[in-house]
Image 1 (cartoon, one colour):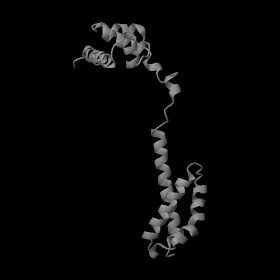
Image 2 (image 1 turned 45 degrees about the vertical axis):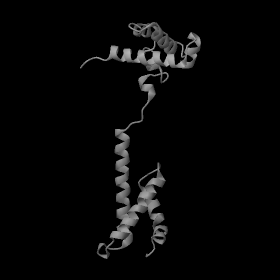
Image 3 (image 1 turned 90 degrees about the vertical axis):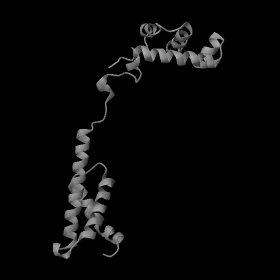
Image 4 (image 1 turned 180 degrees about the vertical axis):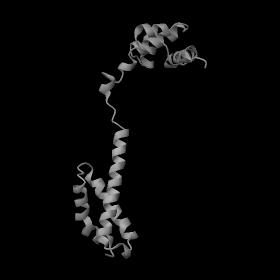
Length: 163
């Protein structure tokens, strides 16, 4: 048993037997790897005082696989997959529909200049890009970007509440 590859070939049926005896049906390859790692560790730590190597290896392999099963079980219990049906969301943007409703957007235009209002309404109500807005109002793209920049500064100041 000097070569680990020969040892792993010899103990592969034992690892598969342990996996079947524990009724593992998901991620068999992962548990097989855990078994091989446990075999490697038992090979390195084996002392003849423990008895036969096969008995010692069986105990170590089964123990490591059981520990891995416990870890996976804890993970599955604590981290349930997210189910979008629980929140009853029809699409990912439906949560933000209220924010971009016409009435709400019109309330944001208070305190903005005419050009800033144009940018806000064209962007959020009609989904226009900066270049499209520039074409509509026959101004440069830089001018529309300036409207956007100053509008965002005003909106941020307007909606930040002091703590």
